[in-house]
Length: 435
Image (cartoon, rainbow, N blue to C red; front, side, top):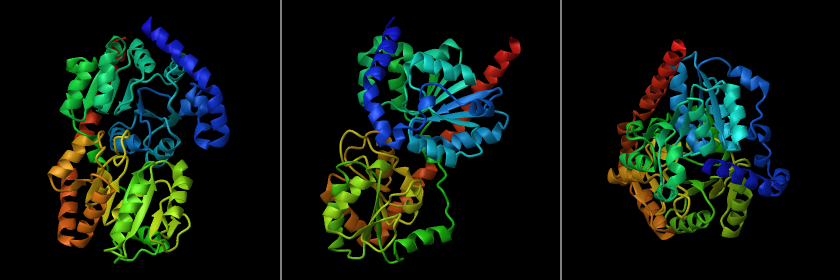
């Protein structure tokens, strides 16, 4: 009865919010993309492309999760070429990233359906997955229940549960206990995540600690000519120290710009590249830069300026590769939790983050504990840390090497994830053989 009520309330919410989304559809492309698929209507060509057994349905909400699971998807396909892979995302940028980075490794790419019982059922029956794999922290009651009803294992890879979510799951245990009880495997980032999952309702035997698959990401390697093209278009010379502020959110750009102004007093040739997390904020950040009084340009325009607004998709990792130091956003303001600190660390760059980093707290602890990263209290601390690192090459290179060493020392979770999926595939095959 409680899940019927949930489904009814979900339908009511969709109806109530429909006018809002209709307006958004006419003003923002991201609300128009994939509408039929979000309601469970999948094109015949995608269903046919992924037809065949067994099929694994892998869901990653957006860009970060898609990039994180990429090594798992590629390895799974290489080791099991006969397995079909259906991949779903929620966001347009996540969808575009999957289309680019996972080309050749997935058989069909769709937008994740809304958690409406009939929409979920349409997709599940169209593809008939042998396993449903969720990345990190996506908990959708109706699809979990539908998978359990169809005897399809639900696997959560790189599983993490924030303190806030954990409290909510315990407060509404009458609802979430059964949802988490549908999980066949909760492969946790940390032991703390594993314990939270068990307390939330995952069976003790179905929860284990495997580590963070983000350590296994292989960073893109750009041809030197391509990197030089980026640098040349922005007039960046080998002697220019480059500070990259990646995945920034509202309220952070102002702080980053203020810190950069302080840095310029000691390092007049320093450059700043700002990469907002969401593309729809490019114009908003450009307005902030106009007010700053500093010269700036957009990456798409090129030209020589102190500040570059990175208004392209998919280039942040490459920009990290030639940065001098890197700040990872979503951490200078509360309520976001931060983003993947390893992206600059892969390239041996000192990593900076703000005081409101919660989602990647264990990653930050590893980096800071080994001297590869630094927590910033505010924009003043940002400025002082940046000046210190830019002034002392020995400290900077030591920190970068330590960050890269942390990455290398913690690899292996992707392999464990692939082996876990293969175990469920084998079990599914055995079950079909006995029918």
